[in-house]
Amino acid sequence: MVVRLAPLRRIRSAWLVRACATASLAILTACVAIDYPRPGQPIEPRAGEALVFGRVRLFDDTREYFPWRATSVLGPELHLWLLRLEPRSVSPELQLEQDGSFRGWLKAGDYALIANRHVIAANTTSDLERQDMHVVGLLRVPSNVVAAYAGVLVIVTKAGAVDLQHLQTDYAFGETRVYADPLSIAQDSLEQAFGPLPRSPAVSLWCTGDELPGFQDTDLATRGRNLLDRGCAGPH
Picture (cartoon, rainbow, N blue to C red):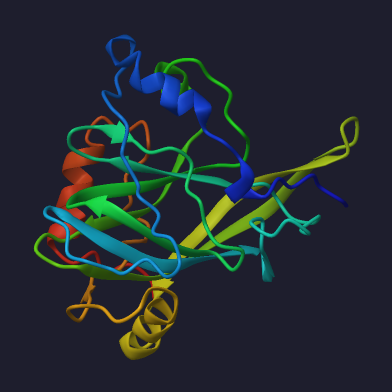
């Protein structure tokens, strides 16, 4: 079954930009800013921010696929956003490299990674609240560090019913888990693109597991923060 797949990094999230101007209409109050460094741009300390780096790997059951590659034609479509827990705010759609690598400056704080299998067209942030969004991980961005390694987040989707009329397959989210490459290897990869770090990076891995709160959970922020406080011993 051939399924349409849009490369995620090429999708523009103009609706989230518009949403920032209409915050009074919605539960979400602002937009999370992500500054993506350019290769060759030196990494310098920033007050209240950290350069978060890591990778996302996607599997359809046991087969790995790469929706960020322009040549990808098989596998479910997948789109990712960062939701800041407090104050509640959301980023534009994440821009990942073709292998799923992520490098972006974020303000210190607690975040949920939310996912949807479809492009969301909306004019206000309230439209996001009505979507079938899934929390696939939590992340704490530490303060007083230059960079933070988040590890490798593995997201598994599972094929469901086939829509013969539109020649599409429905997909459900399965398990998520995280593992960490040796920090020296992850740091070397980052420094090959941006030069030496002024200080060693911190390690703040994704939080995964069955205890992740749902996107519509009214206690999402409290439950998410509690999980991160206790180290969130999810599957590795």
